[in-house]
Length: 483
Image (cartoon, rainbow, N blue to C red; front, top):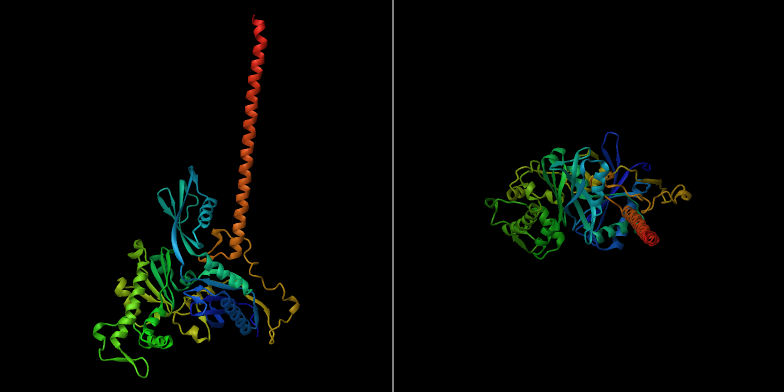
């Protein structure tokens, strides 16, 4: 039987592109209806698309397979944005006000608009997390209604390369797949694996992926820093593969023998680990290879934690992703960071029901895609599909599925966006057009004002000349009378 209502999310990972469809139940739980995976290692590296044609084909394949599984056409999908080059940068916008001005929501929106319109060379603003507002000398989360003469907005802008952003949008456009919403994948996952207490008291979320490691720092329920490190589990695999073996064999060795930390007293110097039928490696040397690369990853993670929050992490460190499954990973992080409170997030906080073993494994590898699924709130189901793939009513097919450019044509204001929502290409284009028209209108008004001032000056100047001529003539006429 065809599904009538469901949500579809797609994650573009470095090793796999994953599509998932699920239905939200009245009790808040989510039932996973279908999961499809495609190998993406040949066209996505470190979360970045570098072959558009292959990516378009993969997106089309995933949507088609999900549609066949669900026996329903897919009208739109939720997409996660992540990968290398994503970084955060602080920005401050200041607005001077007349004495004793009461702050309004429009003033706050103006600060947010100004921040969103900031231009960074070759970088696109994906999201802007409001840190706090400074009203006078006090910091406030909501300044509306407070009297002041100076309003300061502190923002954390999340940036990504413009080329990466445009490639992502173009791929879905060329695949003719409508984007319901784009989310920053790290934030979508954080909202679904972190507890409110962890976000409030201060924590670091570390997503240990295959090609990248994502670091998110939270304090007082606010994202304070976000960075993607171009190192992951595959770097450990490649180091092992340097022992002259296939990467697939190296990956198997890592999974079977890999350990994040081994006490020196527990190392058996006589133990040999088999590489193949003819070769083996000393256990100590293998341990040094694995721990050496992992230590580099941990050092890079800890260097991303801003100094002002390093001693405020009462919520501790939360590890997730495939790399978090390595034995003694908590000990390795604890030894280097000296943070005792470390938790491994094996699954999202939502109740998820599924018969798929990849979902029920609870190994942290599906947390991002499940976080995107949980974010969805718009029905992605289109028309029902027959067994031969045709719609029951082929005449009505045209126009039932929105095109990629049809959604979000009216750009939303920054205050209307939720946490982690990325404006689509259509919204950005519409916003740019709106800014252009506003700039033209402002220029026209300014030109009219200057023209009016010039005319008034001329009138005043002519008036002065006329007055001088009149006085001169009056003087000439008056002189004979005086004689």
